[in-house]
Image (spheres, rainbow, N blue to C red):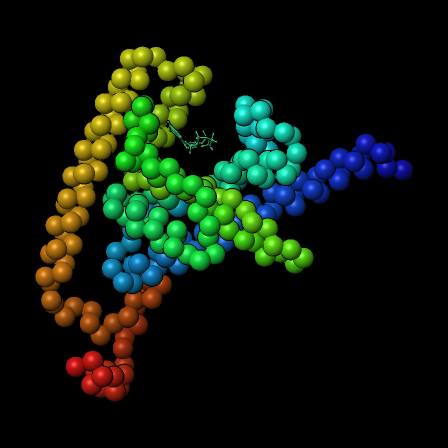
Length: 245
Ligand code: 0O2
């Protein structure tokens, strides 16, 4: 016969699984939104503003550590309300301007509620950390209820991401007490990252201008959908061209 303790543990496990599942669904929903934006953007502007998207669910161990660190009450309702980065997505872009485009596109979606926007690009952290952080809330439609779930989105350039991952490794390697000399070097590296991002942004602006002035007919009779090329049949062209001439 099952002991009382085992039955209680099973119940905790069921509740925790149900709790964590809502964050998995939130990530699925946000990842779909990001993928749609990416493909639509590619179609309209002929380039992809997103280099990588990574998502993760905070482990129960890390959730617990944060509960203790912040002094929150240890209950699922308190965790749901207070720990807003259980579902996290990191979007890496090539250019700073793309970060704000992606952020605006997400913030303008009707089913997304913007809870918080921290702009560490305009206001970097003292150590040099740069990134745009959004806390969003999205509704998840379950079989018997709707859950509003928080998702943290971090958007940054490839260069900012390179810096942040190295800084993160150093921070943990020295058990959160980074030697002063390394702090200085990291800050210098962060300044180089900012200069590089600015240079890349300028080059990108120039390339966009060349593209606007390029009126060649290459690929005019082709559609590119999901990386697959489709020819536009001549009948479509003759039928519709009069509408746009
Ligand atoms: P993990 O493992 O990445 O999730 P919070 O603790 O989130 O309530 P805070 O500090 O106000 O409070 O949140 P903020 O500033 O939005 O930062 C949250 C996350 O941003 C961190 O998550 C890191 O991922 C990242 N981050 C913030 N500052 C730095 C930094 O100086 N260096 C690096 N490399 N990353 C940073 P967690 O919870 O620390 O960890």
